[in-house]
Image (cartoon, rainbow, N blue to C red; front, side, top):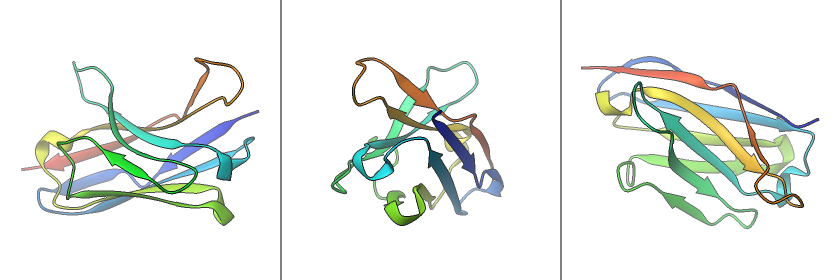
Length: 118
Protein backbone atom coordinates (compact mmCIF):
# COMPACT_ATOMS: atom_id res chain seq x y z
CA UNK A 1 0.00 0.00 0.00
CA UNK A 2 1.50 3.29 -1.13
CA UNK A 3 1.36 6.18 1.32
CA UNK A 4 2.56 9.74 0.89
CA UNK A 5 2.40 11.89 4.01
CA UNK A 6 3.07 15.62 3.76
CA UNK A 7 4.01 17.91 6.61
CA UNK A 8 5.45 21.35 7.20
CA UNK A 9 2.68 23.63 6.00
CA UNK A 10 1.46 26.60 7.96
CA UNK A 11 0.90 30.33 8.06
CA UNK A 12 3.78 32.62 7.15
CA UNK A 13 4.20 36.27 6.27
CA UNK A 14 5.16 37.34 2.78
CA UNK A 15 8.90 37.04 2.32
CA UNK A 16 9.13 34.18 4.77
CA UNK A 17 10.13 30.55 4.30
CA UNK A 18 8.68 27.11 4.84
CA UNK A 19 10.00 23.62 4.26
CA UNK A 20 7.56 20.92 3.24
CA UNK A 21 8.33 17.23 3.67
CA UNK A 22 6.72 14.18 2.11
CA UNK A 23 7.45 10.78 3.60
CA UNK A 24 6.78 7.87 1.26
CA UNK A 25 6.15 4.21 1.99
CA UNK A 26 5.08 1.22 -0.06
CA UNK A 27 7.34 2.09 -3.00
CA UNK A 28 11.00 1.68 -3.84
CA UNK A 29 11.48 5.37 -3.27
CA UNK A 30 14.86 5.74 -4.97
CA UNK A 31 13.42 4.62 -8.30
CA UNK A 32 10.55 7.10 -8.40
CA UNK A 33 10.24 10.61 -9.77
CA UNK A 34 8.66 12.70 -7.01
CA UNK A 35 6.62 15.84 -7.55
CA UNK A 36 5.00 18.66 -5.65
CA UNK A 37 1.71 20.09 -6.88
CA UNK A 38 -0.43 22.84 -5.44
CA UNK A 39 -4.05 23.86 -5.70
CA UNK A 40 -5.34 27.29 -4.76
CA UNK A 41 -9.05 27.93 -4.12
CA UNK A 42 -10.96 28.06 -7.39
CA UNK A 43 -7.94 27.07 -9.44
CA UNK A 44 -6.70 23.90 -11.10
CA UNK A 45 -4.00 21.82 -9.50
CA UNK A 46 -0.61 22.78 -10.93
CA UNK A 47 2.82 21.20 -10.95
CA UNK A 48 5.26 23.14 -8.77
CA UNK A 49 8.43 21.05 -8.93
CA UNK A 50 9.69 17.58 -9.73
CA UNK A 51 12.82 15.54 -9.05
CA UNK A 52 13.79 12.39 -10.90
CA UNK A 53 15.39 9.30 -9.45
CA UNK A 54 18.70 10.63 -10.74
CA UNK A 55 18.25 13.99 -9.05
CA UNK A 56 17.31 16.12 -12.06
CA UNK A 57 14.87 18.86 -11.15
CA UNK A 58 12.28 21.01 -12.87
CA UNK A 59 10.22 23.94 -11.64
CA UNK A 60 7.21 25.98 -12.59
CA UNK A 61 8.27 29.38 -13.87
CA UNK A 62 6.42 31.05 -11.01
CA UNK A 63 8.66 29.45 -8.37
CA UNK A 64 12.04 29.31 -10.11
CA UNK A 65 14.74 30.85 -7.97
CA UNK A 66 12.56 30.74 -4.85
CA UNK A 67 11.71 27.05 -4.33
CA UNK A 68 14.07 24.09 -4.17
CA UNK A 69 13.06 20.45 -4.38
CA UNK A 70 15.35 17.79 -2.94
CA UNK A 71 15.22 14.18 -1.82
CA UNK A 72 16.79 11.92 0.77
CA UNK A 73 16.55 8.35 -0.46
CA UNK A 74 17.80 6.96 2.86
CA UNK A 75 14.77 8.56 4.54
CA UNK A 76 12.29 7.97 1.70
CA UNK A 77 11.50 11.66 1.86
CA UNK A 78 11.18 14.49 -0.63
CA UNK A 79 11.37 18.12 0.43
CA UNK A 80 10.26 21.46 -0.91
CA UNK A 81 12.15 24.44 0.47
CA UNK A 82 10.10 27.56 -0.18
CA UNK A 83 11.75 30.96 0.22
CA UNK A 84 10.57 34.50 -0.52
CA UNK A 85 7.00 33.35 -0.22
CA UNK A 86 4.25 35.45 -1.76
CA UNK A 87 0.52 35.61 -1.08
CA UNK A 88 -0.07 33.96 -4.46
CA UNK A 89 1.78 30.87 -3.19
CA UNK A 90 -1.14 30.24 -0.85
CA UNK A 91 -2.52 26.79 -1.67
CA UNK A 92 -2.80 23.21 -0.56
CA UNK A 93 0.44 21.48 -1.51
CA UNK A 94 0.37 17.83 -2.54
CA UNK A 95 3.09 15.24 -2.93
CA UNK A 96 2.79 12.96 -5.96
CA UNK A 97 4.39 10.03 -7.67
CA UNK A 98 3.25 7.53 -10.25
CA UNK A 99 3.09 3.76 -10.52
CA UNK A 100 6.04 2.58 -12.60
CA UNK A 101 4.13 -0.33 -14.16
CA UNK A 102 0.54 0.83 -14.57
CA UNK A 103 0.32 3.86 -16.85
CA UNK A 104 -1.84 6.66 -15.51
CA UNK A 105 -1.90 5.41 -11.94
CA UNK A 106 -0.84 8.24 -9.67
CA UNK A 107 -0.42 8.37 -5.93
CA UNK A 108 -1.22 11.48 -3.87
CA UNK A 109 -0.75 12.62 -0.34
CA UNK A 110 -3.49 14.23 1.71
CA UNK A 111 -2.06 17.71 1.20
CA UNK A 112 -0.70 20.37 3.50
CA UNK A 113 -2.02 23.93 3.66
CA UNK A 114 0.35 26.82 3.03
CA UNK A 115 -0.99 30.30 3.72
CA UNK A 116 1.07 33.40 3.00
CA UNK A 117 -0.21 36.64 4.48
CA UNK A 118 0.58 40.02 2.97
